[in-house]
Length: 242
Image (cartoon, rainbow, N blue to C red; front, side, top):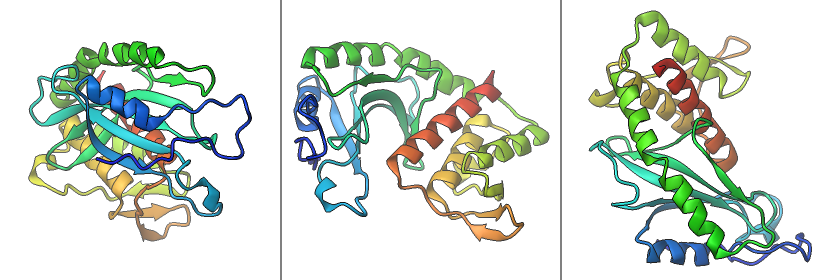
């Protein structure tokens, strides 16, 4: 998959700014056996000079370093970067669920590694990869905990209510729907978490706004908001799994 970033600093950056080239890092990942699963870049609305420098998110997988005991998911390493000052170079864990093509992201209970655009060398990436990969067993266990947790009806309602608030104060209630048989059992925390995540991230379900009016939820495309929402949903799910 082609990485579209220009890998050069935007004109707004100072002389002290050092580019962390996504293409070079991607080449390094390839040498280590990582595969690029997806690439997403922020939409440029006002300043056309930012095109090619804007924030971008790359999802990578590795059959050995990111192995998992769960047949229905694939663990991923997420890399966020930019060359216009909108993002540091960031690495974190995530996972991809095959049945719904959902890309999920871990929250604060896992380490996120940020490297500033100053004096960075490729050796720092080696160390960062090691620290991220070291968390895979913990993520495997977290997914297992989500799958094993059973909720009663009141807990299901409360989970949906708390999750809805993560979309902002304008959302007071969401009519979450199961979009496939694999997510129909809302008493199973893993299925509920995935159904809610898909509803809030991709949109399509009805919600009630602060004025009591029914609207159809729009999807989230902004990378920063998408990442934050996914992290918060994961942390919420893990709180219920405890």
